[in-house]
Amino acid sequence: MDASTWCWLAGVLLLQAAQSIEGAGGAGWSYGGNTGPGYWANANNTCGGNSQSPINVQYSTAKNQTYATFNFQGYGTAPTNATMSLYNTGHAINVNLDSASRGFSVSGGGLTGTYYAAQFHFHWGGASDLTVGSEHTLESKAYPGEVHFVHYSEDYPNISAAVASGSPTALAVLGFFLELDDSDNAGLNSIVSNIGNAAYAGNGSDFTQTFPFDGFLPADRSRFYRYSGSLTTPGCNEIVVWTVFEDTIKISRSQLTTLLGATYYVAEAGQQPVALANNFRPVQNLNSREVTRSFERSGGSGTWRISPAWQVIGLGVLIAASFCPQCVP
Picture 1 (tube, rainbow, N blue to C red):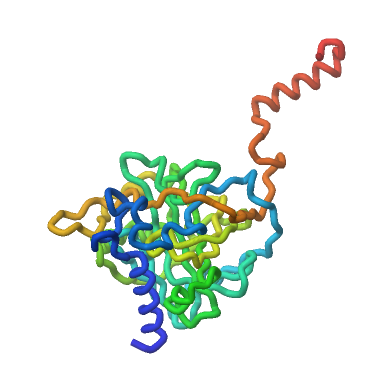
Picture 2 (picture 1 turned 180 degrees about the vertical axis):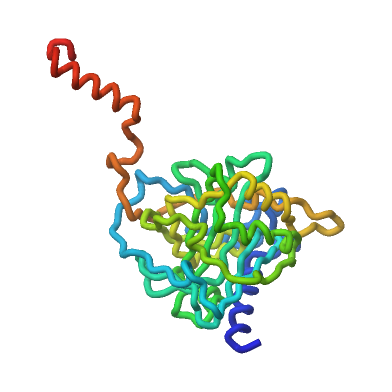
């Protein structure tokens, strides 16, 4: 294993360690009970900070701003020297990315410089309730899940150095909502079909071949929200430039339930592992932070649109007015 691969592996392990901080009394953190999100700040003050994630994103209060177009490298055609692996951290399902050439990256879109991708991972709800699961919400609406693409700034040699820096722009995370669709998302098949290899905490395997992210991501990535925040798991480091996209990743009910039914949390001492579900942190206070958006919805505010039925009624009124002006109030 060469030096660059060791640096990548060390960075991924550090980030996963940051997501596995010990909770109060030495117990590991979790998504429920007395080690759940409401108690994370007891063990790590940062989790009670003023710039925490996720948040509720609102179009009406976000400031419109013009951004340059995003430039995605490696998203459409994965570099040939890249390795992708599926891994169960005990709290989420990761796809870890290793590329000696730093072939997966994003720039533009208002980001300062280039950010290199280290991994992406999933947050989701449970099989009994697919109306929740996303970490961010949009206009107070939750989605069945959310995918986070974690990138580190080119200012650092690897992700471990970026996390250790404490800089508020050390990481750039791209968040996409998962939305149920009638059809399978073919681009997700590589993950769905291999999920059994990451069933239990610490399990994982390399994919036999890389696959393009563009195959499952929304084609339009020009509509997004931007704010400064944190990792959504302990230690909740406030080092993230967040981009939350309005257009969603489509996933079928069958694909999502397959993922939910085949993965398990890290087991508590002396207990059997339980299904990995509802691994999302509740929304946090925005406090004094500003949220910007890259687009205007049709109709201005975006909260009022003319439905087809009202269009027909309006057309009828106009026709009536042309033949009988006194009939129209």
